[in-house]
Length: 316
Image (cartoon, rainbow, N blue to C red; front, side, top):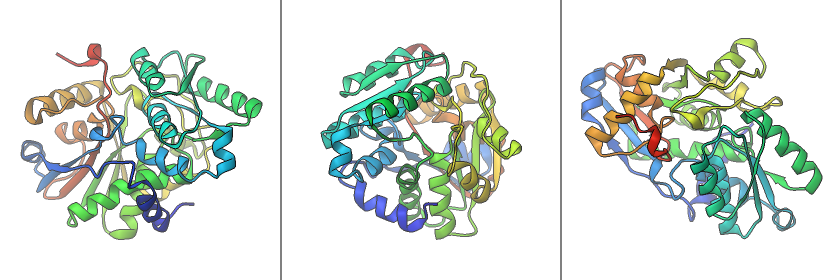
């Protein structure tokens, strides 16, 4: 299992390739929620428009020379694939990204524009993952897993390191949850720096796959539904080894947000802060605005995870 030392090592490894993003205050969200402060970590400013570059950079720049020659492969709902494509280009490595037919074309086009090959397969993330396993076995590609990988988890955990450097008094972390790489990495770092911090995972009602897996005690599959937070769709992997136990052991509480919560948060971020954010980015803010996360009197920090949203998905 990755630990704080792995997160610190990741911070050094990825420093040349990722942005140290700003942490801004939302007085308006604090007034609505009763929090002492609401701090938003603007990961949507990263080179590919999402936090995913952190985990992708840590994995790809840990490859041996022999592994680089083989090329890398992944499966994705969009943002991870874009990050892998970008970082593989920086490293001079061939990349293949497996996507399901449910992934919006604008996301697939963005991946191809950065140099990766896309393989469109099946109607769900799980189907794309099956295709990924088949191609990896046939061609000998090196996997860059979206979330269930120690290097990826440690890379995402660097967000929490920066938050504590920027706002040492943080009491609560609110983190979007799907496969769990972001939440697991941030929780590992946060718990080791401040054992008293409260860590809350935010899932969407239309795809609470990690919550259902926690309840079952093993990975489960859910039928995918349309959602504004399309980058939070997908399973946690049939052979999940890391994020399920890490989320189970390091996270204090879980909150579910609705599609309306997401829409309101996307609108709020634009009107009050001039931020264009995708639905997944709005999960934590949506929980705050809807009063679903107990943050009264607390200093709260959350990653605003990405801005890769299609024009037709922006609510009026």
